[in-house]
Image (cartoon, rainbow, N blue to C red):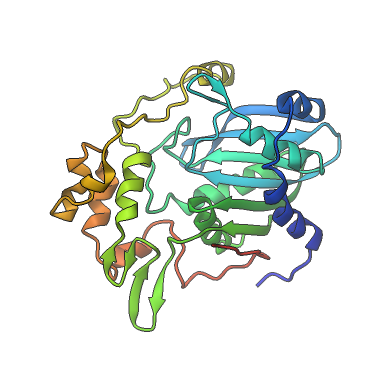
Length: 300
């Protein structure tokens, strides 16, 4: 286990999540006054897949620590032609305190290349991202991670890789780890007592992306991607359905199909039992992993 050597960095990660939600007037103008903004950077992974990354860092010649969030959720600045402020608010709160803020989509999500898997993208993506950021001339080599839900579970798993730059983490609302309670196998909040939780059927209908989604042509430049992102956020728009009625469908394994949803990942999950060894093969956190980074954990 790593000794706890960086209390100020750790404390900021905790307080950062509280402050960034405040309403900001002219947040983009304020951010541009203090930050170098570098959006749609395609960060390379070891297998050649590139992950879409937005970087906000202080206007300084010195080296700075990094707040990093790897997420399957949409952080694009434009959604349905409307400019979004959430990421800018997060970045502003980090940068004004002397940190770079880096947010990245997991492989297969939105502008990132590759195929997404809710059951866990390769943990090497996290390790490769840490190495890339550490090598940047503006980085001081210390990276703190932050995020909620899936973005929390990823932190827990990547911490077990013990990258030397992973200085602290704040996992929030985590729930998809794999482990045992006594001699009972559990897979986070997908199962409760061996029964699948219906809330995830509804969640998957909204978030799952499939292999038939639109793709950005190879060779698109960063300038192209920034321009395109104003018009296409690559977020699926699912038709509204009566979810309460849809969840009554039997058999359970055909619920998403009956919704006319995208069900490639669901098809694997719904037939996988809690004790299936395949849970341990992906990038999900499981209880045989040792966490090495100083951590603040919280959940409701």
